[in-house]
Image 1 (cartoon, rainbow, N blue to C red):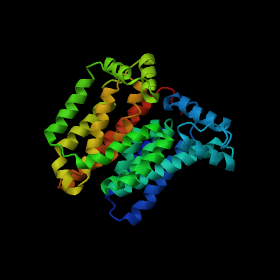
Image 2: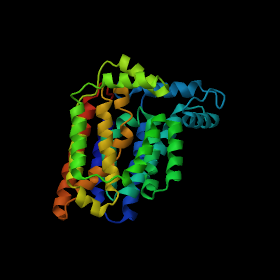
Image 3: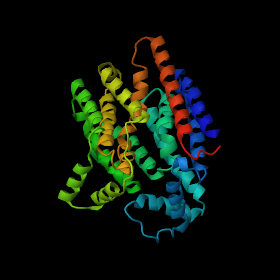
Image 4: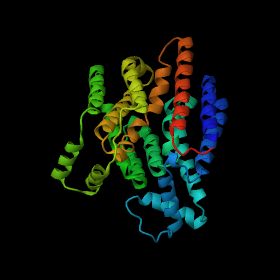
Length: 350
C-alpha cells in the first residue's frame, strides 16, 4: 500500500500550489521530496516490477568493489561515488539513499526554478518517471537530473558551463551526452505546422520497421562501442515498444503544448526549449522502438521536460476558475494513470 499512498499523498499536496508564499510552500515540498528519497532508498531488492535485476546489479557492484582499486570503466563518476561511500561505510543502503538524495534534490531544485507549480510538477515526475527510473535506472536518473539542473545554462546561453554539467553527467551514464543537443533548441525557430508535422512523422514511424535502417547504419559506420551495443540489442531484442497508453499520454500533452504554444510563450520565453525536447524525445522513441532497451532509456533525457510542459498547459487559461479546473482534472488523470500503472506491474509487493 505504500506505493499507492505516495501517489495519493503527492496528488493531495498538489493542492498546495495555490499557496502563493514560498515561505509556506517550501516545508511541505521538501518534506515530500524527503519522503520520496526514503521510499526509494529503503526499497526491497526482489520487486520484479521495478527493475530488480538492475538494482541487484548495483548492489552486487557495490559489494564486490575495492575502492579506487577495481577497474573504473566508462562510468567512472558512478565508480567514484561507490568508492567514496564504501570507504566511509560498507552498506549498500547508504549508496541507494545517497543516489536518491542527490537525484531528487536536483529534480526539486529544477522544479522550483522553472515552474511555480511545484507540487504539480513533482506529481508529474512521480507518475511518469519515479517508480521505474529512481528504483531501477539510478545511474541514468542521476545523470538526467544533472542535465535538468544544467538547463539554466541553456537559458543563459553559457555553453562551457552547460558542457561541464554534461561532462559530469556522462561519467554517471554515457547516454547523458545526448543532452548536449538541448543547448541548441533555443536557437531553432519552428512554426506550429513544423511541430505538428514532426509529431505526425513520429507517429507514422510506429507503423514502419526501422530495424533494417539501423543495421545499414551499423554496417556503413562499423561497430564502434555504441553501434556495437545497438547491433547486439537488435539481434537479441524479443519485442519492440508499442504505441501504448503511456506514449499516447505523452503525445496528448505534446499536441496540446503546440496548440497553446503562442500563449504559453508569453509567460515562459523558454517554453519552446521544453516543448522541442519532448517532441524530439518522442521521435527518438519511435525511431528506436524496435530496440526496446534503448527506446526506454535514451529518449528519457528529453521526455523529462514533460514535468514542466504539463503544469504549463494546466494554467494556460486566463480565467482563474478554468485554471483551477484544468489543474484538478490533469492532476487527477496523473493520479489515475499512476495507480493503473502500479496495478499493471507484475511482482508488486505490498
